[in-house]
Structure formats: C-alpha cells, structure tokens
Length: 228
Ligand code: IPE
Ligand code: IPE
Ligand code: MG
Image (cartoon, rainbow, N blue to C red; front, side, top):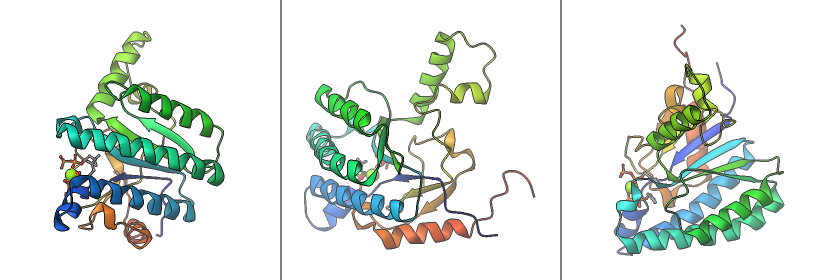
C-alpha cells in the first residue's frame, strides 16, 4: 500500500563540520552552507505539501562545543531567522520553536518571539526549530509542568499536553544525514513509531532530490503499529 506523504518530517541536520573539513574550510563555513540546505529543504517541503517540519538546529549537548563555534552558530541562527521572516510572510509559513530558553542569548530570544508572533496566523507549512532542544529535557519539563498543574495519575496523553508543542503530531519520518545512525537526544518520545531514513549525504549537500529520495523510501515502508 502506498502511504500518503508524511504530515510531519523531522530532520537531524548533521555533517556540516565534515563537509567543511573536506574542503579545508573552517567549521562555520559548513554551517553557512547548511543554512542554504535548510532553505532548499523548506522549499521542497512546501512543494510536497508537508504540514510540519522539525529541524534539529542545536541540541542541549551542543553547548559542549568550542565557544567560537557556538557564537558563530547563534549569529547564523539570528541571520537566518531575519532572512527567513520575509519568506515566511510571503509563503504563509508559521514558525515554532522547541527547546529550553536558557541559556540562549536574550537578543536571539527576542527575535524568535517576534518571528513566532509575526507568523502565528499563517496556515501553510509549520517550521518547528529544535533549538537548545533535548528530548530528555522535554520529557522531564513535561513531567514537572504536569505535577505543577496538579495532575495526578499521568497517562501518555496527559504528558503530551505538557510537551513544548502539544499540537505537533508525531513525525512519521525522521531523516538523519551524514551517515550517523542515532537519535542524539532528539524526539525520543515522539519517535516511538517513526520511520527512519539515514543517508550518507552531508547536510550542506542535501537538496530537493535527496528530499525526494527520503519521501520515496518512506512510501515503501509498511507501517504496522504493532498490528499485522
Ligand atoms: C550539524 O553538523 C550541525 C549542528 C550540530 C549544529 P555538525 O556540526 O555536527 O557536523 P559534523 O558532525 O561535525 O560533521
Ligand atoms: C545532533 O548532531 C544535533 C544537531 C543536528 C543539531 P550532533 O553532531 O550534535 O550529534 P552527535 O554528537 O554526533 O551525536
Ligand atoms: Mg555532528
């Protein structure tokens, strides 16, 4: 049976550093090229009518990188957000962010809040940026929030109401580039029944053709959800 396109695709955008290293460039050049791949991918997602796309942009563990790389990434995020706000208005894109606010730079947080507010009424593709995101953090955040709200006897459905975005459907498809085959603390709960697509392509080389390959692979999966 041919399944419909996924409603929600989540991407672990990995391999920027290796892409740069292969070209004897600084790692930040890889991240810059990665930002262009984001643009191409969002265009492809719109073309195929995908409703939600989550992009793993910075993990809770990425703070362990050299300060220079962290600063460069924060600057790039700010610039990308600035450029993309115009596209979002034109293309009816809604921006969401998943992750903890602390210790992101206050100026970036203000910019994010403004972009979220400016696009909140848009009804096209929802781009959910996983920023300072960790799945264990999201789950413990939800448990603490549920307790604080006085919830007793927490069920999976109760817990979901306290995730960063309760209305975000689970991703049917999770893509990871660069040949690594692990989740790296990404969407541990939501990935319970996701299909995985791993490709050796480095994130800065990802484009519409690679996106189509992932969609085609998804079409060939048989999803049983424990049934037969
Ligand atoms: C992914 O690329 C981008 C981020 C984690 C921010 P990497 O920077 O992890 O690239 P590699 O894995 O070192 O090649
Ligand atoms: C995962 O990539 C995080 C992002 C893509 C933002 P990493 O490169 O940080 O993951 P590990 O360290 O190889 O597991
Ligand atoms: Mg990596």
